Image 1 (cartoon, rainbow, N blue to C red):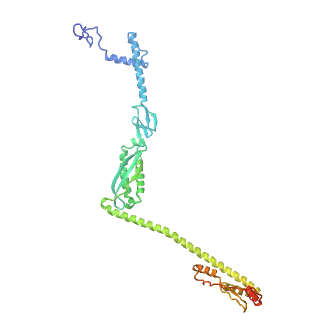
Image 2: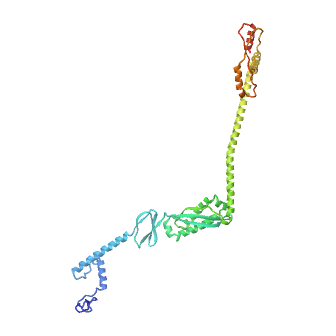
Image 3: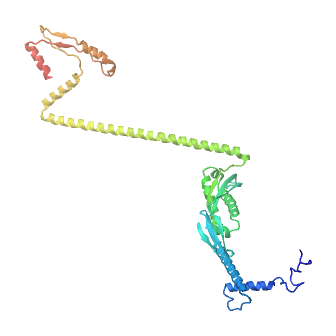
Length: 392
C-alpha cells in the first residue's frame, strides 16, 4: 500500500515531513567528508584525528571500505603503468614523444614508456615501399619535345624526420620529382635521352631527388627510378621512327664493316707474315748454298794447287759421270766373232708404260734399255774394254 494511505505507517521517503522519528537522506557534505577521511586514513593522514563514529560497528565498516578503495587504487596504478608497455615489429620503428616533443626512436622488440598522458608512441613502417608514377611532355636542350614517363619507389629511412620535419613528405617527393625531371631533361639532347643515355638520365634523376629529400629532411630514401623509353609527340612520331630506323641501319652496317675488317686484317697479316717467312727462308737457303759452293770451290782450288793433273782428271771424270748418268743407251765395242747375245727386258718396258702418266713432262721419257749379255772368254781385247769401263 502507499505510504500515505491509512495503515501505511505514514512513512515519507523524503524523511521527517510527517513524522520526526524517520531518518532523512544523508547529507551530501557529510558523504564527501567521510570519503575524504577514509582516503586520508588509508594514506596515514587520519591517525591523530578523533573518531566521529559512535559505535564499533561503524568503525569496522569504515576500515573495510578503506581497504577496498586502496586495493582499487593500487590496481589502477598497476594498470596505468602496464599501459606503457609496447612492442615494435621488425618492419617498424617506434617514435616516443613526451608531451608532444620528440624523445627517442626505438627499434624492434618490447619496450616501455611513461603511460599517457605523459608519453606516447607512434609506430612507423620503414620497410614498406611507396610507388608513384610521373608522366609529362617537356623540352630538351636542343628544343625538341619529348614525353617522359618514370616510376619512383621510396621508403622511410628516418622515422623521426618523417613525422616531425616535413608536413607532407610524399607531396614533397612528388614536387621534387617533377622539378628534377624537367631540369635533367632540359639539360640533355633528344637523341641522348631516347637512345643510349636513358640509364644515365635515370641515375642522375635519382641522385638529384635524393639530394632534395636530404635537404628538406623528409626522412625518405629513393630506392629506384624506373624510366620508360622516351617517346616523341604523336604528331612527329613517324618522322622519329624513320630517323631511328636510319640510325639502326647505320649501326648495323658499321658492325658488319667492323666484323669484315676483323676477319680480313688477320688473314692479310698472316699472309704477309708467311711471305716474309718464305723470303727469309729462301734468303737463308741461297746464302747457305752460295757459301757451300764457295767453300767447295776453295777446297778444290787448294787441291788443284797441290796436284793439277790429278785434279783435272778427277773433275773431268766427275763431269762426264754427271752428264752420262742419265743416258739410257749402252755402246759396246764388239769384236768380230765375239758371239754376243742380246736380251730384251719386256717386264721393264711394261713397268715403264704403267708409270708413264706420273712421269714429269719436262723430263724425256726413258727409252728401253738394251742389255748385252757377253759370254765369258779370254779375249784380251774384251779385257781391255772391261778395264776401260771400270776406270770410267
